[in-house]
Length: 264
Image (cartoon, rainbow, N blue to C red; front, top):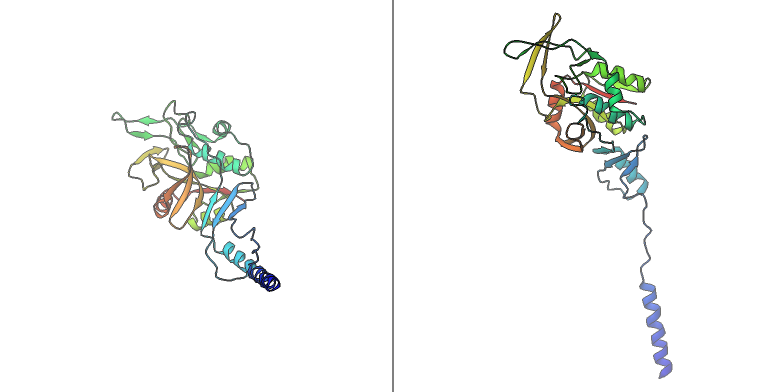
């Protein structure tokens, strides 16, 4: 009897061992969506699902269908030193991402200037001033009245630091901005203080030219996007990767002359 019970016990043990499932090997690259950018920052891409069971084919499909990018770009605030220095502060962030240890105050000193003084009417309206296409208009520190600068003078300054890598995307499509973000490159763009279409325009004379521009002109660094939003480093608010409605942002960028500056 004892022999029969022992034999039955051995059969039961063997059966349990045979039913034990094997452990599945984990895929170390299957869930990692953070790819290093060429400049050392994290390039985060959201991937669409691929139904194939081949791990290598699935990974390739995810990389080719990315619809979201977020770059890790250092945030730098323009205040308190540069009340009107959103453009050079944005350029400082761009250069830092490119590996250049730029300083916003040094860039502000080197930025081309249009030194034509502001002239106002008796009612306080600006009648004559500088041209932001030639250089920064007014006092960038805000100690006296200041305004802004457009893309060409900022490009000239950037060329001193990245002579063979500066890229001016002005006049193109916003798809060009998206393409640079996919490459891991942030983009300085011109917008307004609240990223919406401007509702306050000002005009003045500069020699024989008439300058017409919104008073709340602003520049930020585009650092990412998804299907419905763009993300910006805003030097005025000091906020990193601030989320903005994508179509509203594009409409305003177009109104501001499609100005955009980046690097390769």
